[in-house]
Length: 131
Length: 100
Image (cartoon, rainbow over all chains, first blue to last red; front, side, top):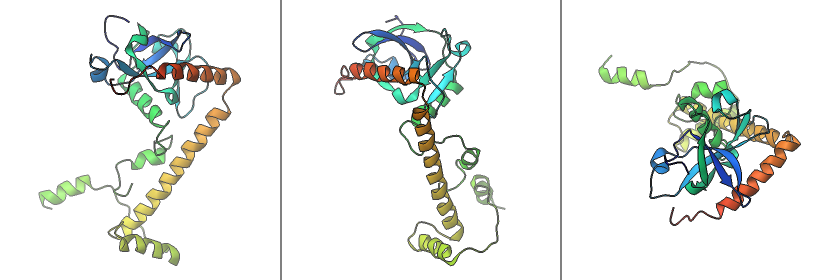
């Protein structure tokens, strides 16, 4: 692994699986965990090279990620990964706004009440006691 | 207006006044929300009922979009997802949840 610990929003190469195939992953866990030497794992979301956008998938262009081609960040594959499996920091760091979208995307993988593309829903967020 | 009322006005959600009629069954339902303590008044009962309806619609939309995603995934992407799942499953065995 690189000398510096992984940080939230960074893209890393990681060895996944028994065949130790290299994948790109986005670190999404909080930095308090990422830099801690008391825990040897981080939360990551893997990128795919093929796909379509969906409630739990973000399509990201090379200009934003620094990856060689268009990639698909797959929130439904969020997983715990040993820090030792992270090999090298790669590409760019995603912006705070983008990370907010990533968090919302991950949430849609497990929370049926997660907001999903509705201007009407957005308009009432925080606006009423019953909801 | 006293300072407390000013603060309440600032924090109260914007309310729209309406005047209409509803089916007697709907009225009974709203009254029941009040009787069972889920709402304090008719306005709150109506807000609550609509909030429940909107939540159900949001859930249905997300479920439909998720179904549409997996059903329309191109074959190449589906294969990649499958191999990714296998790879992550192999990694998952390494994590010791008792010791971080």
